[in-house]
Image (cartoon, one colour):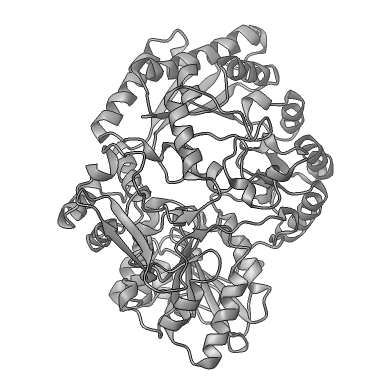
Length: 620
C-alpha cells in the first residue's frame, strides 16, 4: 500500500477517517509509471454518497480495463478535513495512489445535482488547480464534467475545460486516444481542446460565444471557430445489454448510502411525466436482457458479499421481464440470505404476486409517488395514475401484509390550486381508510402509518415544464402549511405524518438548474463566502447565497418567477437530446390544457428520440 497522504495525527482528528485511506476491496491498483493517462474521477460530495453512485463505478471499471489508463477516485473532504488541509497546506489527493490530483491528466466530476456546484470549486481549490478555466495552462489536469446536470453546463462554463453530454460509455475512448496523440506530438492545451470539441458529445465552453438581448435573455450561442459544432448531440448506449458494467465494484470500508449490489435493468423511461428531466434526457428506454442480468447477479454476489440486490431503473415495472427476474433472484439467493429491493414500482402496474414473494424475504414500508393530490393535476403533469389506481394498489399491498406506506408529492406544480394542495392529505386519508376497511381488527399490528413527503417543484431543462415559473420561499411554505392544516382535519389524522423540504434551497436549485453563464459569478462568490455541501441542511446558508447573487449584480427572480416566452432561447438549447423543443413545447401546452399523452409503448408521440437506434423506438 502507498504511503497515506494524511498523517496519523490528522486521521485521528477527523470524523470517519476511513473515507480517505483507500485500499478497499476491489479497488484497482496500477503502476503509475506504466500508464499513459491518469484520470481522477470525482463525486463532489462525501465518500458515502459518492461510493453509492453507479455511474462512477461504471466509468471506473471501464477506464481501468484500458491498460494505458489509470482511473482513481476522489471525493469531497468533509468540512473538518477541509479546514485541516487548508491550514496544513495538504493538496487534495486520489484514494488509490494517494497522489495529488494536480498531477493527473484529467479531473472528471460527475454533476448529479445542482447543490454540489460549490463543491466542484472546493475540489479545484483544494487540489491547487486554478478555479477559473481561463487561468489554467497545460500543466494542469483537464477538467471535464458529466452527468445529468451537464445537460445545462452553462452555470459552470467558467470552471470546466470540457463537458461530456450523454452516457459515458461511448466517447471517452476517442477522447483518450486523441489525448495520447497530442502528448506524442507535444501537448498544447488549446490545440487539443479544439480537436476534442469535434468528438461527439464533447462540449468545450471556451470555444463558444454567448450574446444577450437587452432584457437579459440569450440572443445567440455560437462557435468561435470553424469546424466547432454549433450543436452537441448527446451520446447514448444503443446496445444496452452489451454495455460495460462493473461486477467487481469497490466495497467501502464504512457504510455507504446505498450499501448493496445494484443491477441496472433498464435505462430511460416510457412514461413522459412532464416534470421529469431523467425521463426525457435518457430516452429512449432500453432494456438489459434477462440472461445478462442473471450472469451479472451471480458475479456481483461472488465479488461483493452484499446481502441485498437492488434493481436500478427509472420505472422498474416497465421492465418486460420483471417477474421472471424477481422470481429468479428470490429462488437463487433466498437461501444465501440475500434481500431483493424493488424501487421505482408503479402502483397501477403493481404485482401482488411479486410483492408477496419479496415479502417472504424482506418486508419494509412501500413507496408510492402520486406526485399530485388531485386527478386534474396528475393529468397536467402526465402522471398517468388515477385515484382508483392509487387506492387499489395500496389496498392490494395491505392485503399482502404491509401497513406502512410512504407517499411522495410535489407542491408548486404548474396550474396548482388550493384544492390540489388539500387533495394531498385527503388522498392520504383515503389510503389510510382503505387499510382499516381491508385489514380486520384482529389482524392489525397497531395503526397503519402513512408518511406524506412533499418536495417543492423545480423546473428542469429539457422537460415540458422548463417554461414554468417558480415562487418565493414564503409562497412555498404557505402551500406546505395548507397541506399540514388540512391533514389535521382528516378522520385518520393519527395515521398520517407529514414532512416537507426546505423552500429556500428549492429556489436556489431552480436558479442553478436553468441558469446561464452569468450565474457562474454568483457560484464563485458563494464559494468564496464559505458555501459548500449546500445539499446538507447543517451547512447550507441561504443568506450567503443571496449576498453572492447581489454582489454579482444578478436578480434571482429573473431565473425563478419570470414568465418565459415560447420562443426564448434557453442556455441549453445548443444541446440535442433527440427529444425536440417542439415536442416539449407541445407537451407544455397539453399540460396547461390538462391533456394526457400516452406512454411510448401505447403510442409513439413523435418526441424525436427515434433518431437513436435501439430501445423502445425500435420495438416491433
